[in-house]
Length: 290
Ligand SMILES: NC(=O)c1ccc[n+]([C@@H]2O[C@H](COP(=O)([O-])OP(=O)(O)OC[C@H]3O[C@@H](n4cnc5c(N)ncnc54)[C@H](OP(=O)(O)O)[C@@H]3O)[C@@H](O)[C@H]2O)c1
Image (cartoon, rainbow, N blue to C red; front, side, top):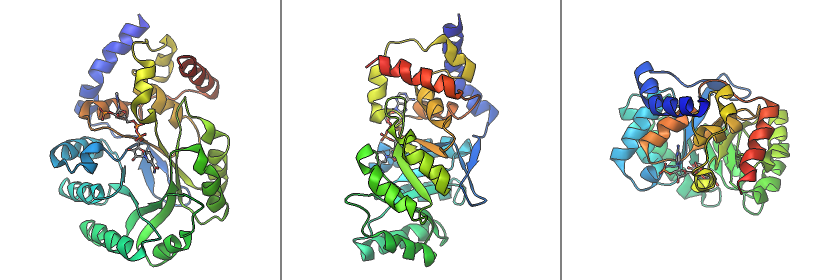
């Protein structure tokens, strides 16, 4: 009975979101008066492939429901910034973009091009990848001091990068960290997330669906009846709500090129969240499928 109720709600959810024009809840960026919507949009295939029609649909839905953070690398960042501007969200869209401190002149040219599309304001967040340490971190600090960007951070998707990230986080010079987290990849909860809370670093999460593999793991399995206790109506929301119920998390990034999937994912930002005991139950359940 509860499962069929959940299924019916899932069918209704896109209409409910659109008709009600509900705005996503937000969380603060630590140490600032800025806030981010709890569900963000990852670097969609549509952005990467320059598909402006799909990108426009995705961004219109996302920003229209109060979405703010869009993670965008490479050429996709220009497309996202430009569509956000045409949709009237030049300032409310928060772009997390990627740069290399090693190729400084190229990065500055790319950052200035993006800045021009954003109307000349500083970039929101300039990220880099920690590889063998973060040798060019000082360059990011200089860019921030010079007013090229408001925030700087590190972003990676695997436990093997955590040591390098924590080394920089320890210096207190980092505003954002982006790591992988889901019921199947929860190592960040032991190390990165407690330190981020301690240091006042905003946390964005990647791989909520392990880049899609999660859906083949849960495929054909009914949601547990107790998922209604935290207003969860799909497996996508199950992972999103698991992530958002960690107190260190600012925003979870979900990648999709499918507008219906986006609505499903936005639904994960609304309603109740699981408590700590339920989180463990969620993790154990999904891990038992593998
Ligand atoms: N900095 C880094 O090193 C790094 C590394 C990895 C990821 N990231 C960022 O994190 C973002 C998300 O992580 P991810 O790339 O691992 O992707 P993900 O969000 O874990 O998974 C994306 C996959 O799930 C599918 N999907 C999304 N929503 C769905 C839904 N509601 N129902 C069914 N299928 C759904 C998508 O297919 P459809 O398109 O068909 O919906 C896609 O195949 C990326 O976009 C990127 O911005 C950063």
